[in-house]
Image (cartoon, helix red, strand yellow):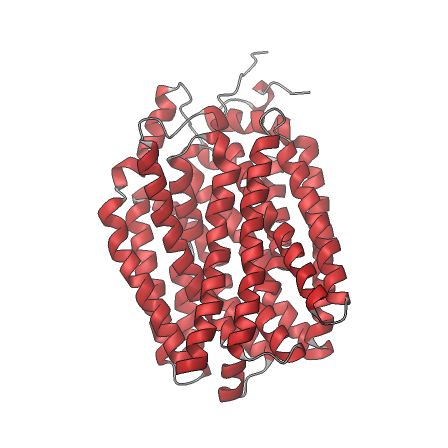
Length: 441
């Protein structure tokens, strides 16, 4: 039997020929647009109390306004990312940014709940593939051993954007009304969308260039799309990451309302405190990704072990936090819990990058985003809102962290197969028989 020695994607450096300074400029601009993405998404949460008062909305209706964005991201991220991989990532990113910014401006002009829902729907359409395609652009200009750190740092832009969206949106809404909060954030996104294509060039980050590098290394892929679903480990990475974001997503969305109801904070105060909590989550994503890259250089499966630890740690910390009496100690524990809760982003993104072919990394990260949104960011806020309508927001926040236990169990299953699955994914991409993969003990 012929033995297939895999041409590991984690060893195929797609950043060859790209100056490191240019790579960091690409990262900074792509990161900036991701911040704009999440500012447009999360500014709504800062004005929940004002909308609830103005339009007499239920918690379920507010949850739908938030969840509809994540739902559209989940439904559209795969097809739009596949198109971007084929027809141009940079052009696609610019079109996305223009759409979500104009839709956010539409939120500022909405006169009633149905109009706001339509505008939020369009925000979701615009943001649908940005995280995956932007992540693929970042992955393409840096070496493989930095993946967990860079993907974690890139996804931390979502947290930073949420921080700015909630804090800036709350402050503007308190002074000038909620419509101006949407308008200012929309204008910031439009300005970045104009600057981006003037600096980031399609030819340097295109999938065609990545495929050419793979051909040169002797790793030409015949069936790269099959690597998206060919192994148990990559499927578990999708599911485990999505379930864990169920926990983080509900904290991001409902923390301003929680502080408003149980701490009697004003809109701007609740927004500022929530921003600090989200900032802790963003710092946690970066630190957890750095730790993952450092500890995984000699043992690739440590990425999975660390992800499991992050799930269990967040479950313990957040469960204790929301069971405590309201006060400073509770908020400190929530901050610590959020630092760990989002830590799975970098390791699971690196797992997906290692288990799939470089030419379809945008689509692979889109599949991860699909799982993150359908299992976590869309369902988390919506289900929490529905439960809150029946038992109260305080009780609902206590129950949600238990989802992390399920995520940990899924990732534990992935750990058993990770080494062999990395070899098997290369076999599938190369179009060889599965039995050609050499087992790794």
